[in-house]
Length: 383
Ligand SMILES: NC(=O)c1ccc[n+]([C@@H]2O[C@H](COP(=O)([O-])OP(=O)(O)OC[C@H]3O[C@@H](n4cnc5c(N)ncnc54)[C@H](OP(=O)(O)O)[C@@H]3O)[C@@H](O)[C@H]2O)c1
Image (cartoon, rainbow, N blue to C red; front, side, top):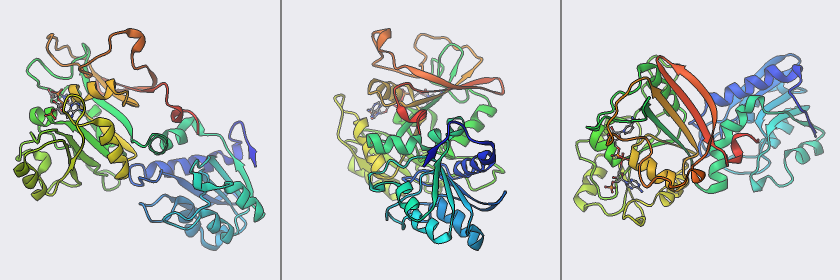
């Protein structure tokens, strides 16, 4: 196997197409990672594919199937090393050998312990060349980050998203927050929801805002993904007429709780939502590490937390925030009691601050979006 330092020109277009395909299935493959693959014959793409929902074909098989006999003697580009083991589907290396592929180019190694000696050993044995190519602009690392976080830590990758004013408020002194950011920012939120597996709010946000937590993308090019909605509600305070419990809403709702009234549980379940009982933390509230472990077991790789301040405070204190999407609106609200994004308990010493690395700054309408990731996590940069 050879490892290139930068993508040679002759491969660049095919790699970019494979990465673009992986992006099309984000939020739709968990617990598997989103992967894209291209079959190249001479200078043409003869097959293209992306990971299907769990239990169905991986990207390589989709691309090979699309290529049919044209794959014979061709090259395969894939964003992730082809699997060598029988999971829910047979090994992709078998399909690559059977299709008569000559060369395989991949970007990220598959760190699954079931990979054995790896795809290179298996494919080389069948006379197939294998080359590793660099990650274009860190795109593959970012695509794989939620999957890798879950595999490494046994919990989903946590993205905290909020809209705040220029003076750092997420709500007015009376608790009003709809809407701090403008429509262009809110579109970005729906695009983000479209590619995560679950989204979560504290019961305080349900009581104040009564949000829908659905992905609303009009005239989108595909059916929007509706992530699992999670309410963190230790005692069953979610009103039974909350919009989020409406059985007609697309997608599913889960109430994470500790000690709720039996009648509330029965009513919530009648609406079709599930109730997950969890251990209590030291404050008698839902133990967040246990909740995240439970969500990982349900196949959640990427969890989007949409507030509010109390929940973000608890997540920050437990060092359970991996990424922040902060929409900053050019408004001033003031008020010493108006909430900031991250509430109690707070951090006493600046040297103990949760330190993030700025990844992107974008303008959406009059708002700024700043995306930052936890400095310590290896999966953002290294495939
Ligand atoms: N601008 C924005 O982006 C944005 C987004 C969301 C919300 N908001 C605003 O934020 C305000 C609501 O925030 P909030 O701080 O009052 O409530 P919150 O964070 O939404 O919910 C907090 C509640 O969650 C429950 N909870 C259960 N387990 C928990 C745990 N381990 N850690 C922390 N909380 C846990 C607690 O109630 P139990 O003890 O009863 O379980 C807690 O009181 C509203 O004004 C809303 O408009 C703004």
